Every structure is written in structure tokens, then in C-alpha cells.
Image: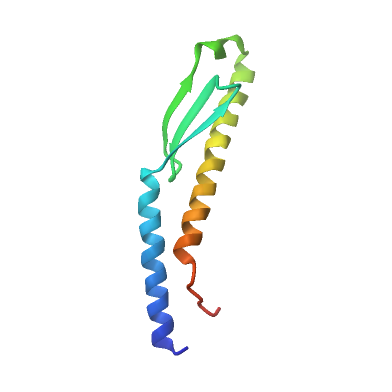
Length: 99
């Protein structure tokens, strides 16, 4: 493979990755914790859109509720990470740049 072919593939890869990154803001995932007492909604860019704390969550102490909120965030982040990995894998499939 000559340099011009490598540059063309790199440019194609960059365009695909950029398109995926742009689309991540449109993805919404929900993380749940405390048997649904707390729900965190975030985008694929990790922007938190909403934190929902149900009335049932009020039975928890402040430290327990803090952990539940954190767990809901981590659940949402894990779901977002999975989607990001899948989308990036599809975008980079078939592009073989020798490094």
C-alpha cells in the first residue's frame, strides 16, 4: 500500500469516526439503581439530561442515596460505553492502517 492509499484510508476513517462522535449526542440511555428508585438519563456524550429520584428513595439515608445515585450514573455510563464501542467498531471495520 502506498502513502496516498494510506492517507485516503486515514481520511475515510477520520470521517467515519467524526460522524459517530457527532451522533452520540442523539443517543439517550437510562441507568437505574435502588430497584428503580433513581434513574439517570444521559447521552452518548455523557451529558446528564435528567436525574429522577422517586419518592420511594426518600426512605434511604443521605449516604445510601448518594451511593444509589452514583450506581445509577455508572449503570448509564456502562450502557453508553457499550453503544459507543459498538458504533466505533462498525465505523472502523474494514479499515486496515499499518502501524
